[in-house]
Amino acid sequence: TARSSLVPLAKERRKTARTVVLTSVAVARLVTALVRRALATTAANILSALLWLTLLCASVIQAFAQGGIPLWTNRYDGPANFGDVAYATAVDGNGNVFVTGYSIDANGEGFGDYATVAYSGTGVPLWTNRYNGPANSDDYAYAVAVDSSGNVFVTGSSYGVGSAQDYATIKYSSAGVPLWTNRYNGPGNGNDFATVMAVDSSGNVIVTGYSYSDISAEDYVTIKYSSAGVA
Image 1 (cartoon, rainbow, N blue to C red):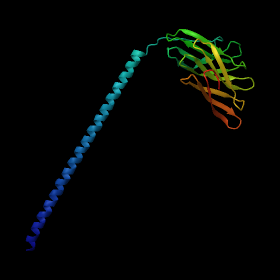
Image 2 (image 1 turned 120 degrees about the vertical axis):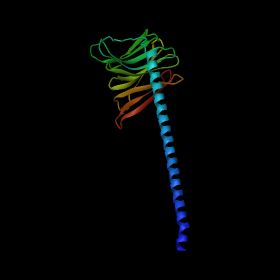
Image 3 (image 1 turned 90 degrees about the horizontal axis):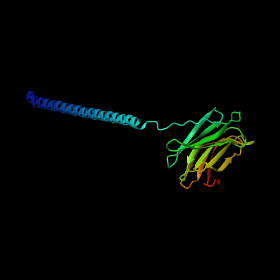
Image 4 (image 1 turned 180 degrees about the vertical axis):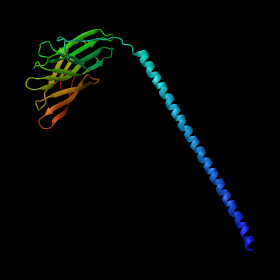
């Protein structure tokens, strides 16, 4: 009687074990399928990325091949036949190009002046303007900008009389005529360097850089001038 009662129990245990095995196999197959799908998706993504990168490189190479031909080259040699260094450039709505920096002057002392050169879109020199500050010392232009009327603004640092380096901002007409010059000497009477500028839609010019103070060393100093040069 005891043996007969154990037979159904053994059968039930074998059935349960078989179910567990089948379930484990199903789970294993499901996991395998998911892994294969993930790998396929990853491979597809990698292949897609590689294809995109290949097309991008091809387009860049093509752009250089079609658009990398030099159209013109201009050199500017200042009056001292010595150091001439350009720092910034801007382009107006007509394609004219404006380059500014510093150029050693011809007085034999080796000081630099602002030197701004305008070229047409085809590379023809239109005008050149130099600026020598009141101390007849180093004057370095660091930024240039153009307004919607073609007026040109240049700023940088220029030695003042008894004031070390000062901001010096100049506005030229589109024909290169100087319209106004503004200088800024900070409260520390030390070095003040204008390094960046921008022009808004109304022709106002914003100049920024750094200025020495006796209290806090160098500070940001930002100045806005009207188109007429009023601060």
